[in-house]
Image 1 (cartoon, one colour):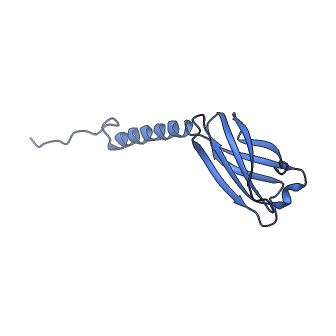
Image 2 (image 1 turned 90 degrees about the horizontal axis):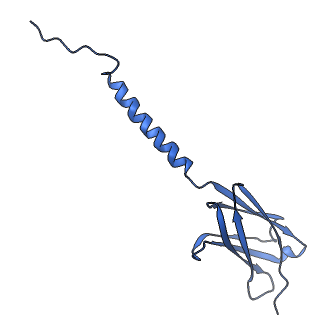
Image 3 (image 1 turned 120 degrees about the horizontal axis):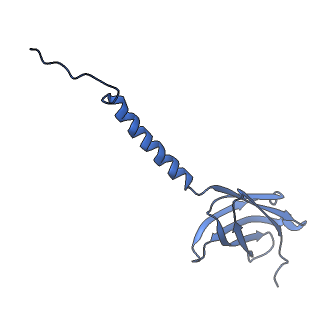
Length: 135
């Protein structure tokens, strides 16, 4: 009597084992992406006529423990455009912002302090006026 090879069924097929592994990986990737912090856009809408002398902006976003979670600098040869945007990977919550401005003809940088309320929206628009020169 010759040894018979075991009969293959759909349950013993090697592809089934691979499909289960692929399914587990796919669910893991979906859960990882679902809990990922969305990329948001902070848009400063510059109001007023005095922005032409601004040569640099330094944005710092701080969390509740005063740790910097985002810092980005922008430089301008002829002043900034009327809207300046920054990309942020922030969860929902409240953050403190510091916007340092280097204005041509001023020795010290001006600072604009603010609170950033991050909700579900992916775009946060903040109207901004240039502070008066300090004496």
